[in-house]
Amino acid sequence: MKPVEWVDATSADEAVASLAPPGAVVKAGGIDLLDLMKEGLVVPHRLVNIRRIHAFDGIDEDRTTGHLRLGSLVTLAHIASDPLVRARARALAEAAGHAATPQIRNVATIGGNLLQRPRCWYFRSEAFPCRRKGGTACFAIEGENAYHAVFDNRTCAIVHPSATATALVALGASLSIVGKAGAREVKVESIFVRPEQDVTREHSLESDEVITAVRVPRLPPGAASAYTKLGEKESYDWPIAEAACVIERSGNRCVRASIVLGAAAPVPWRAKEAEAALAGQELGEPAARMAAKLCVKGATPLSGNAHKVQLLEVVARRTILAAMMEKEQPR
Image (spheres, rainbow, N blue to C red):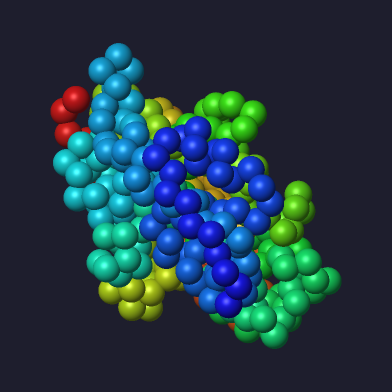
C-alpha cells in the first residue's frame, strides 16, 4: 500500500485548502472510502479528515424559515432517532434508520452517504474494466443484473446507492457546499449525474468542494412524508426497491405530490408523471394504485431484473398510501 498523508482539518477553509492538490480526498465516516481504497478504486496521497470540524455537525431549526439544517457530519443513527427530524421529515428519518447495519449507521455521515460510489459488483471488481472506470462496456447489461437499474440503464446499469438521497430529493432538500471557488447552495436533486452526461461520475461536486450542511425545507401544514424499503434481509441488505413520497393536501385531496424511487436507476428517480396525476385526486387506495402504476411506466428491465418493476410498483403504492394517511406532528 502506498504511503498516505493524513490531515486533520479544523475548519472549512483548512479542508478546502488541503484538498487543493490532485489526489487528496475527504475522509468523514470513511465507510465507503476504506472500501474503495481496499478495492484499488481510490489511491489517494492525502486523506483530509473533517471529523474535527464542529461546524459541520448537529441538527437545528432555522427560526425564520422553519427549515431543518443537518450538518454534513451528522450520522445516520442520529438522523434516524432525532425527534425533530422524525416530526418534520419522517421519510428522511426512516431512510437513515433502514440503511446498512446499526454499527455502520453510528459512523456513516449524511454527507458521505449522499456521495458514496456504486455498489455494482462489476464496478467494485478489479477484473472488470467497466465504463464507470473508463472502460468500453457495462458488463451488467448482459451479465448478472438482478439488482441493477430498470430505468436509464442502457449506458450504465448501476443503481444509486444512497437511501437518504431518495428521501432528500422527495423532500426538496438542498446542500450547502464550500470550495475553492466559494460557497454555494444547490438542490440535492441537481448534483447527481446521469450516465449519458458522464458515465464516470455520480455527482457534480468538484474535487476541492465539501458539503457543509443539508437543508430540508419546512413542509406546508398538513403535508406528510413516508419512506419504504424492500430488501432480502431487512437487517442489513441493500434495497431491492425503495420509495420516498411527500403528499401535500387540502382537505381530503392531494394538492401536490413528490415521489422518488430508489434502487431503480443510476440517480434517484423522480416519478414525474405519477406526481402530476395525483394532483387533485382524493386521498386513498385507488389514487395510490393509479400513481404506483405510473411510477413504473417506461421501465426497461434487463434480463435478470424484471421482478424489480413489480416490486417498485408495490413499494411505491405502499409509500404513497402511507404519506396520504400520515399526519406530520404539529409545527
